[in-house]
Length: 473
Image (tube, rainbow, N blue to C red):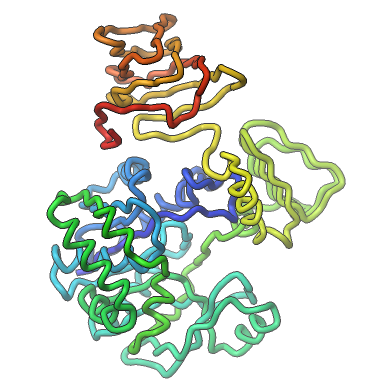
């Protein structure tokens, strides 16, 4: 039995401004309209031998993740382990291992996949997984090593050791991200592979190794699972917050793979990319005769070797070369192609300044739909709100603001104080500050409305929830 475990989270800071803390890298739209998470899920469910997919993700991303999976059309059972906060990959994998042992037995083989990688060759991937599965059943902790095509300084490497039977190799050592000269030596040697961050091992075997090489992670995971098991459902497990917080923030690479014995590697060429920078994302777009790549409306004059991502408006360039230009509703990035790894420094600066652009887009996704801030100023904010059919916002109240709702299309079911009524297209209602209220879409089409807020304080944290179908009350 093989259990794919998809790890979905992270901030994707090198892909800012499209990737944000509340809209991380797995959810960004690729040029073909798909998402990295959606592709990962479809790649997993296409494998033989599997009976369910386990996803470890942040609690706030659960509904969006579920929507991505539903869009694939797969009916394979899915289980979600929901983290209250980020603690890196070692705790996530350990807790997934406890789930697999409990549900499928100690010999269940886990296939650890990152939600934000691309793999173009499904057949080669399936063959690599088959080999890794067989090695895992022999007791090995298996990683997937990507045969390097060019020297890369943004990847970790591993050095290949003696061959194993019937395939694969032992791992001689893991190597940190090298400088350019060292990376060139690694590629020329033929003995080094890129560390893909994908793994395969038996669940009980991993837990046994963790007890020895990272007992702090093992103990925290064991305590957290014991505290969680009594409250989780068959398919939705909210990890116990207090015990989860005891986990150290450490990756599975550092905590286990680099310290353990019996680590094996399956060398493979599967069209892999971690899409770790704007250069990698630009490579997904076909270039023009001048080496330019454009996604959106652009006019490029005397421009060479430049990538432009334009979301909502026309972007024009004149007389530039080797630039990355990313234009979104609320932020514009202009970077030299040689400095794209440093985009994360912009995010660090925004965090230091307390600027919301590191965390949120102008359009924010919620379990019930989306809202977009159209304009704001002293004492007012205007939003466009879209509610999915059958969805509803929480029953809530605001201390400091009143709201005026105007329905643009669809039908709204409204609770306002002690009244419940319907508001149709081109109709409106007023919610005074301090009133309990709820907005629901009872129809089969999207509900679109304009909300005008006014008051002394208009922050998103001025919400008191009394009940909520999404567990946020």
